[in-house]
Length: 249
Image (cartoon, rainbow, N blue to C red; front, side):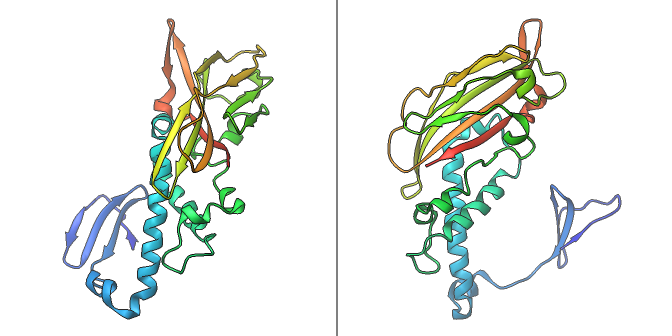
């Protein structure tokens, strides 16, 4: 793979070269490679088939989690969250010590506490990390999904972008069943506060416990707004917003 330089930007195939555009610029690679039929049937590619099967399963697990929190991600996610989450799911799959190679899954691997820990503190927006945005201590109540911030002074406890006048916070409690690829989620009401020196305890209480069984995820969404003539506007299309898995069980 090579990177194109210069003013001529080509996309498509020319002779044995394929030109394409990515986030990293215009790239070029040679055509060719092993045929799909050979990979699917040749005994020499058994390991390749096993790796491909497990990678597909890990990617699906990432999609299941993303679908569960899609409404939150609409306001706080970067354009590489899919690949970042798939990478973690691939690591979690490795904790499945009961299944043969090629059949290991996230659904079995995530039962290991060390595997589950890989998802704790995951930021869906790598441009706005919870650890670099909010400094007030908080707790999570596992049975109810309630997030408590007992002492919260926005102007001191938040690293806010220039122009922001208000902050909103929302909690969520999700049940994700990776085996059956289903999920349920409950949200707390939004707490909206001016960014000032007022000490305001914050309690984010989900509407209920989500239905079903599976892995429990507790999430915190932070959004920034600028108020103009009594109307609050999201800053820079949400690029400063935080969505973080604050705990999992």
